[in-house]
Image (cartoon, rainbow, N blue to C red):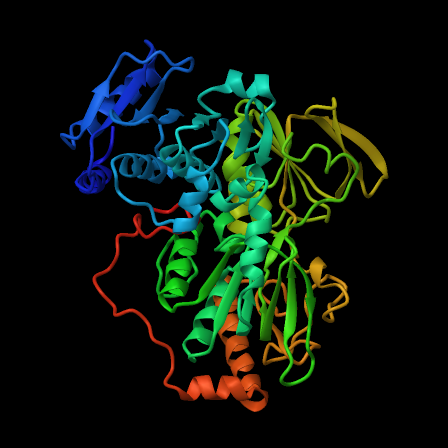
Length: 552
């Protein structure tokens, strides 16, 4: 079941177990049950602390539960968790077996203190990069609180379940049988939603923070680089991010980062977070900013207001909030988002197996999505607004070779059509003839670029008509004490490596501003720089994974 490399890796991890655990499998006579049995027998043979039982009676087969003989635990995988979920499987085994997670103590305490019983069903796909964060967050909760019941369901494996519940995007989480959330979530976000007092407690804690010399908003490549470069100057640095990694987390393959032959978005995000932590940056957790009030005068503090009401103060602010998926802005799109309208073909594609779908956008992203979906869907229709596709020639050639793909150029989508519950069609207009057509389908994948995440800055900083923050060559904005970097700015060429460089530049510019205008910062810098932990042996990439606070 596991190849040699994966088996060797898992064998190493199973040597870290500290206490017995039990795997209880619920199997049928089908091929997938046989496949799961082989995997579980292979895992059980890797440690004397693992007991495998084949007498499970779970309603979903194939499935397996992971528990402890000495404590109550409710964690079930209705899946064969390989692919992107292999890490989730390993972490579930390690945590159940007593290996401590890399989660803040207050997060664990909050999990343990949850007073009610919560039954979560988390629908995912093995090709989804956003799903592991949700799965691992819920797993962490199930391991540390017996009142939290979690079932992880592979939507591609349980198609009837998906259809019955109307699941059309992953990750999708149900709580006590009702819709709870769609999309990537960190454990703090889940806790904040189910723990009514969490937001107020978090706001109070943040409100007590001393002012920062540099406060970075955003945890993608630009924000991470800015925080690292600022911290290296020996000044008090904080980083606020809704999610570490930013848009990188939604990137499947990265092959243009110099000195890194190839990597994946979540792996790079984890490395960024580890690097930021290494320099002692005050990481403020999964919070979002709602307003910025620049000081615009030396010696005063800029104020950053958060969505929970807390206000943070800083001598300088670096905005690196990146970008988000651009939407079509047509009737029906918002209503059917996650109900047929999707933005990640890798995540949601398996849910449309054997069904007709459309891809909107003829750039590299759109054509790549159409190519990927052609191997899953019954038929793919790609619609491009312009008379010609904008994708690279090699991608267009591949697209043209696929028998179940149709390309419609010079077409404008005018409406998303549905039955109230899910997408059934889209309407488009031939721009040359003004003729309107309706295309019957089950899913629409929107691939028309990104929008800067800057709406919250309205009135605070100068932005261009596209919403990008206007900066000069030193990453300075229209406010003297505010700097900006990355995809949220008007800097050309939205690339990871460029965002990193811009983040570093913004931090150096902020430090220059402090030297010239901030007495306290000069004194701090003169005190001897920043103290970092002594470099030791390279940490295991899995055990140092920090794409969410649920990392091991």
